[in-house]
Structures are given as C-alpha cells and as structure tokens.
Length: 187
Image (tube, rainbow, N blue to C red; front, side, top):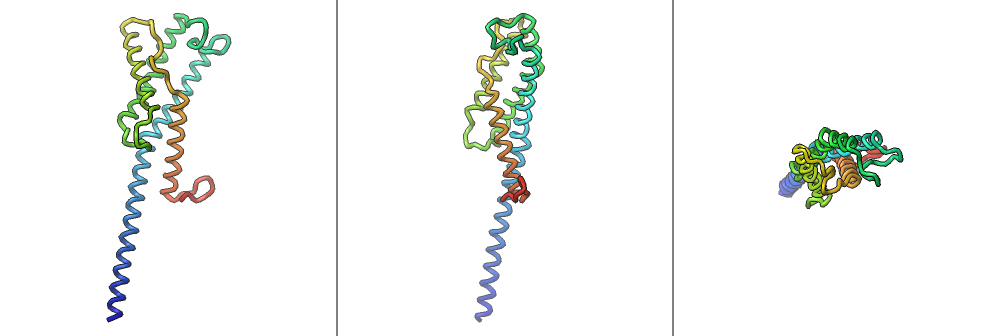
C-alpha cells in the first residue's frame, strides 16, 4: 500500500513539475516572440530611421553651411531664396518622408512600446510631423512664408530613445535565447 501511495505521489509531483516547466517555457517563448516583434516592427526601424535622418541632416548642414559653419536657419542673416529652395527640396524628398515613417511606426505599433503609456517624446514627434505637413501643403499652394514646423524636432531625444530601446531589447533577446553577450552568459 505504501508503495502505491509513494508511486502516485511521485507521479503527481512529476506531473506538477512538468506542467510548471512547460508553463515557464511557454511564457519565455511568448516573451521572446514579443521582444522579436518589438525589435523588428518598432524599435529596430525607429533606430534605423533616426540614425539615417540624423546623418542626412548632418550632411545637409555640412553641405549648405554658411562661411562660419552654421546652418542658414540658426544665423543672424536670414536664409537666401536659393537656400530656402534647397531646403524645401530636402524636406520634401528626404526629411519629411523619414519623419513620417517614424510617426507611422508610433501610430501603427504603439502596442509594442516598452512603456505602459505613450511617452510624451513620441507625441512631440507626431506633432512635429503634423506641423511640417501643413508647411509642405502651403508650399504646394505656392506660399513660402514658412519653412519650419511649428513644433521643433526632438532629434537628440528621439535618437537616444530609439538607441536605448533597441539596445535594451537586444540584450533581453540574447538573454531569452541563452546567448552570450559581451563575453558572458546572459540570463
């Protein structure tokens, strides 16, 4: 009789251990799937877009800087008509498509945010894009009295946000995969 009770007890304990281990593995797989989606659908593209936009803007400023090395938009002397024409070309073909893509990521993939609430920084980005959309619409109608968005672009902040989010998730992904990170096992 004792042997039967011990056998049943061990079988029950084995079942519970197997169940809990399976549950833990399923939760880990779900977490890994979410991290992969966050990286591929939000933080990875946002990071790439912010880096590309920053480098392209840097190239624009370098190419079109005044003799003192400053941008025509942060200079005592207002931009010339030629500088404004060049700016409109860069905004419509490069900068606005990039920042629209950033805004679209925020709107379409808000469920992938790491934070429980929408960060004000991302709302600021969305407002900046809307401000440029109205500016570009005025240009399309032949009105060139405005050349900037009514809301400034949070370039350094958005770049830091994307870089940090991407790095944290890559570390989490490596941990969930049981990979080594920086020469040590990530757990």
